[in-house]
Amino acid sequence: MVSVSYSHRLLCDADFILWLSTQQGKETILSYLMHIKSSSEYCKREHNLILKKEAELCKDKLDSKYLGGAFKVIEEPELLDKYEEKITKNIIFGINLTDDPPFKCYLFTSPEKQREYESNKHYQGITNLQIVSGEKAINVIKGFFSAFNSARETER
Amino acid sequence: MTNEETFFTDFELKEDLVESYNENSDIKFDDLNVKKKIEAFPIGTLLEIEKKIGSSITILSVKEVNEKLLASAFK
Image (tube, rainbow over all chains, first blue to last red; front, side, top):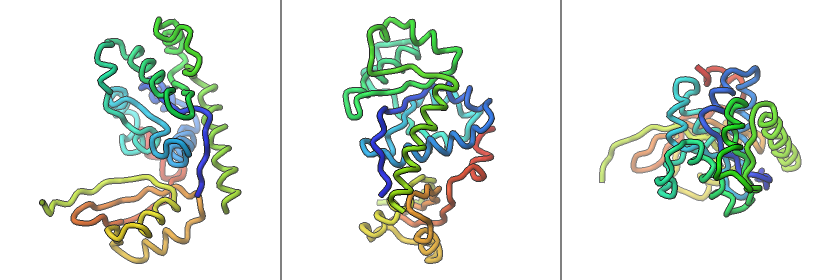
């Protein structure tokens, strides 16, 4: 069985999906994300996550069936009720994910939103959650898929 | 108890799907050629699976997830 212990969980916002939808090779990246989600040793099928409200903002750009194949769509947990801003909700949710293995999380967003995330007061001093955007996010996905491919070749 | 059937799409690695139907007698096939098709895929192949849920789970069809399949994913 192909199973990979990826170094970080993946969480994304709508801005990342909207940014990805404008990129060359977006189908390849979507395929990589779907393989990563299905092969996680720690959290199979739940490795990559997106909050439901974020997913709803993407439905005009990406077929919800395939978005769900790449990122598990999660109802907003109660712990986010007391926060209003969507950026804050994503940060708090991402921090919460680092309570469980692999204890680290990448939060993917668009290059335009990265600074807004990094200046959010809830993100200050946080080390296990990392905000990543643009080509750096693509490189993370390619690196994870490369690990999947190596594991697959070993199994075959 | 209702006999209502629902249709949905799932994405699974080939070996996870094989394990599911080997361990769960409630998973059936619309056409046994679909089962043969699944078993012919190499380990680590990600599949788009059309399922019907009623009194049991029926696998209707499978397709390999690749860039060609995903060409229409973005609108």
